[in-house]
Length: 451
Ligand code: MN
Image 1: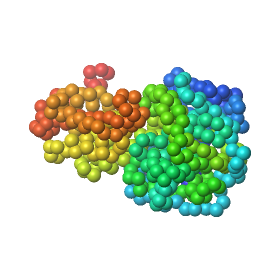
Image 2 (image 1 turned 60 degrees about the vertical axis):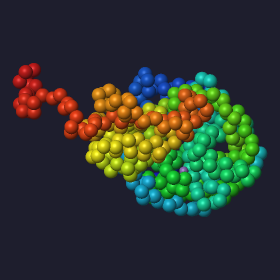
Image 3 (image 1 turned 120 degrees about the horizontal axis):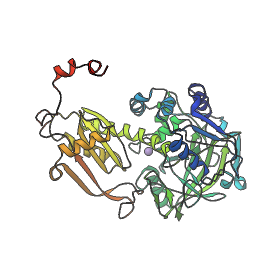
Image 4 (image 1 turned 180 degrees about the vertical axis):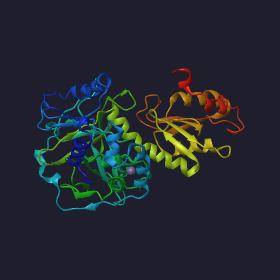
């Protein structure tokens, strides 16, 4: 399997030609790209990958909406859509370490020193009220200051000038932790960003796990081969050799600048905050590089991010409750779990497992295995008919959650809750569900009555 964006796009063009749309007419990167993605989805019920060949103010074409379809993501993992969670768990359990190469397409053009100009990249404004143009598809590659741990993540970058951006480091997550250690020593933290990658790299970057789990090896597990990495020009960081573009830089110690507001996955445009500064030291790219954008807050963003979250939560619940049936993340900060509860108390264990395994999770609903958690109506029915609030709701106070949750008093400092909507004392002993006698159900044939 190829491991670059280009070979993946060739695969889409041959297997799903309707999923790839080239726009030749010139587009203004201020709001028009997001508008087209959102309008295609809401009015035409279409969500193709869009390649804008002519973008005002830049030589780079823009590719967006790549991840807005589960079957396209499955194609990137080389499996059927219904096998994605299994495939993701397999990549987490059997990671494939990366390999280092000495020649790479991403070095075809190398821009350093005064040649660095972030303003020459597409200056995409996504939503009304955004503080400025943002890079939304930049995947960070970093190493802990002690040199022992590698990390990858998506970090939004707000353009501030030719060689400066702001960066959003999620409070209490891994890159933030690396940065805090570097900053305490008064040192910058080198970070490089890959833009324009194969979806297996995008999915691997979102793996949620312990800080010492190497996302690059999970990318390899998803690709089915070692991810090829090459050394940066301005640091000893390693980056994907076949990316469209690499931005090399460092996060400066003891400096902050206003970042935001920015419309996010929460559905809100959250206000301005003082955040860290990235000094850009080099940009390298392929000849004819395509600049990738993620249509933030739309399906492109939402589908991509839930696959890794659900896989990790399934793994965490299964460690506590072996008979877990399914896990779903239907909305921001929310998780539904269905279990075959063999002894009482397992539903609460599942709640604790979810809240312990993902910083962002704030609300967990656990139901019995006879409830389809992919059907919101059934989940609501179970909460209404199997739950007593004074007995079955657990509230945990003073914890750390998402710093993008607008309901928190102080950014990310939040309470969390779990709802045990399983039947008590057991599903078998509970009031029976209504049903037509089985003998009648099997005997009645619709055709006899409605020919
Ligand atoms: Mn990590």
